[in-house]
Every structure is written in structure tokens, then in C-alpha cells.
Length: 265
Image 1 (cartoon, rainbow, N blue to C red):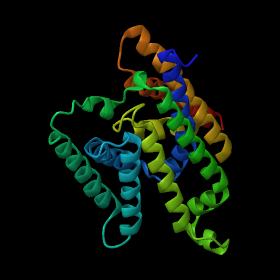
Image 2 (cartoon, rainbow, N blue to C red):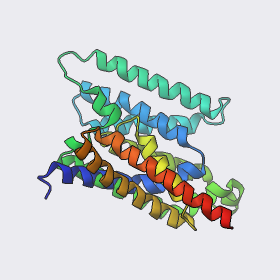
Image 3 (cartoon, helix red, strand yellow):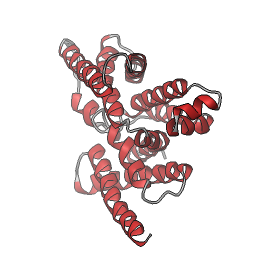
């Protein structure tokens, strides 16, 4: 079954969708969309470092994404507005990454594959990394679900409940860094934020509870991956952007459903 490249691509897309769904819900609730985008941009520097030191792309992207997440968490609230801080770090990391790549002589790099993804080239070992990372993220979010929800609703309520909301924020940002590292080969750094946000935003129109929103977002992400890959195969279009296009169409359709439900209420 895994000898077929379309089957490997489908399994990779579903794995990323499962990891991105619960995280995407928190990104939407906390209005952290730019943070996901900034972390993804920084991962390009990780790709350059991986090629320089001849280590796996996942390791380099994960290391830089983790450093980016920790730096933002440490510097937040210390005199810089969050959007300014993210803008400086994201674009600086992306620029350093692109410059570092230009110095790599004798190495052929398909930079577009890392910017927009190359899901059709996913190997068996890539699948192991993707599903391992997705399982880690889902387990971590499931373990801290109640605390993360409380910290998202009200920080004072979190303190009153006996836990530190900054620790929950750190767990969320670290999970986001793992997801970026896992998804970089599937949809690329420029489209990871879309896979985080669009399924969760679409699910908001149908969900009646936070848990149902995460489950519906996972289903929408998986459907987008399957339908997007099929559309790319039939119409000979780029696979990663095709997946995001399907997710955007689902978001538009479900938004209409949501508006009709609100009109009847």
C-alpha cells in the first residue's frame, strides 16, 4: 500500500491535518494567526542549517522553530508589541535562511519545495516522522486541554485554578513548532498557517463545543487533503496549494451555512 506515492501523500496530508486541527482552534481563539505564519517563515533558516550540517530537514526546522517560539515567549511583554516582535523575527529568520541557502555551493536545492511543499515526494521515513510528530502534538494537547481552554478564556481564572497560563502558552507554542517542522514537507512554510487556520475557522460554523470544533477541524483538514490531492492529480496542479484551495472552498460553504443558522436564531 505504501509503495503508491498517492497513498503516501494522502496519509501525510491526513497526519498533518490531525496535528493542525486542535492547534488551529487555539490559534483562532487566541488570535495567534501571525505567530503560526512567523514560525513557519523561520523554518527556512532551519532548512539551510540542515543542508549545511548535513542533518535531517525535520531536525533543523524543529530546532529553529523551537528557538523562534521560545524567543517570542520570552520577549513578549518586554517593551515590544507582539506584531512588531513577530514581524522582526519572522522576516529576519526568512532573510537569513535565504542568504544562507545561497552560500551552499555544490548543493542543488529546490527551494520552491520548501516554500510551497512537495507532498508527492513524501517517503516512508517521512511518514514515520509526520505521524510520530502528529501523535506527540495530539497527545500533548489532549493532556493539557482543560488548562489550555481555561488560560485561553481568562488568565486570572487560570491563576485561581492553580496553574500558570504562561506555562500553557509555552506548551502551545512548542506544539506549534513541532507541527511546523512536521508539515514543512507537506504544504511548505508559506501554506502551513493556512492549514492551521482555515479548517479551524470553517469548523467554527458547525461546532457546538470546543471539543467538537477540534474534531470537525480535523475532518475538514483530512477532507481537504484527500480532495486536494485528487484535484491536483486530475488537473495537474501543485498539490500543496490545491489542498489549501479545497479548504478555502469548504470554509466559504460552511460560512454560508453558519450565516443561515445565525439568521434563523
